[in-house]
Amino acid sequence: MQAAASDALFALHRGLLATLQRRMPPKQSSEPLVELMRALTIALSRGDISLQLNDAAEVPDGIETDGWPRVHRDALFASGWLDGDQAVLVLNDNTLSWRRWHGAMQELERELQRRCFQAPIHATTLGAPPSRLAKNNNLSPEQLAAVHAIDRYGVVLLSGGPGTGKTSTVLHMLLRAFENQPKLRARLAAPTGKAARRLQDAIRSNPITAALPCTTVHRLLEARPGGFGRHRRNPLQLDLLVVDEMSMVDLELGRALLNALPTHCQLVLVGDSAQLPPIGAGAVWQHLQEADQNKRFKDGAITLTKVYRNRGALAQMSALLRDQGLKPFWSQLSALPKTSNITVSYPKTRQVPEAVHAALTRHLDHLKEKASALEINAHGQPDQQQAQNLLNILDTLMVLCPRRRGPWGVDAVHQHLLDGSEPQSWPSGLPVLCSENQPELGLANGDLGVMVGEGVQQRALFLCSDPSGENRHALYHPARLRHLEPALALTIHKAQGCEMDKVLLLWPALDDHQSSSLLYTAMTRAKQQLLLFADPTALALGRSAGSRHPEDQRNDGDA
Image (spheres, helix red, strand yellow):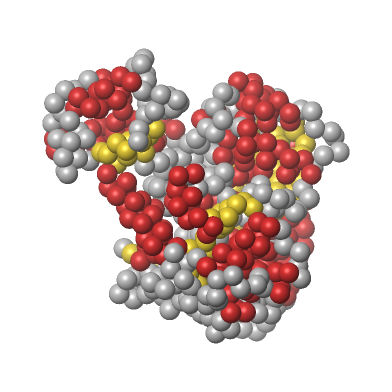
């Protein structure tokens, strides 16, 4: 698969290079110029629309000639590819970008900043006292700042790591807005169905917000082949929109979202910039969190730093990885006490470790027992409470892998535990993943379900959303589900937006350019315990990693 991906990248690089050479024949061609195009192509395949060409920048993949970045800047200037309005590339403060995406990102930035300083329709007199609800709940100064921001700014950026109270802060921001305007039209959204439902569960704790619709961004925008049903000519009828897990939103989706909102609609964007960037081109949230961008939103940009959820070593080590990088992380990992909620082992076998096999077998047995007891009425509908209890078990354990293929990949785990690869041979209780949006069924890409029954009685249980945003449990024949796959293990990319009590992480030896954000995202999926199974070579690679924040590899075939 890696060979195929490499071939595809080579073809893309040659195609882009040939297009540039035909459209703007270089005044002076050179090998550094060819390398620069190769590096831009590789970056684009990972979702990055730019390269840093300053003297402190790391040497990106695709660059082999000595003298980076000076000789490559010189080659770029000599080519004439930056000249004129028709230039495909643009260099701004040593940041080299594709003009198309650079312009689109600038347009998105300007629109967000314009909206930011537009008073919300529920705004009160500036200087009004904070919500009595906020006062009575002992919010931190950072959280109070967010509650104040909802009064003043049309766009609020709320950033923070796991356990810093982002969701509870959003709840208080919503309560403040409804305190000012009880008839406010508000909705919540997230890039994945799992993240959306986790957000919805959190706001259900208060009767004022319990009924607010919470859905995926694609479902909100009424995604359809070739585009979205909601846009400038058919905008959403909203006064306030909260979007969680913004780190997963790419430039195309971000622009579509803004285009679908009326000009007065207030936006609350929530995310953690240390998590994986989106698969598509243009990491909107990561860009907005850059210091020069973030400060333009003034007090509308809030970062939560105080950790409320006591997650022991999980919190300590994920913060270390986020703030200092791989080398300190791997160095301190071995010093953790045996009683910590992170355990690490270095299996010598390249097969699925026995401990993983045993944990998944117990997990499957538990799911099968509950699936067998699920009551189904004469209309083929499951008992709603029993169905929810069954799906809740999915949140107790998950195996995560950086890659789909390879000895410790997702496919290897499934081959190890499943007799057959076809749905009709899957056992009752098997966790399954819907990997395509099916709005007609109320399903979104990333939704997790459970197989119930076997043979002709086999069905897939999912929690679905109807057009009004109401959730219900439903059973579907596998033939109705276009893309259904087993989910005993997930890639880290697929798990983004999820949280599980216990995570078993299979960590092969990865190049350090691929590791930091992958590892951080995997760790922060675990609420209570992380069992890390690492290739012994990974320890040596991690301890030798010199970069503070390496980029992860974005490869659709592996993810």
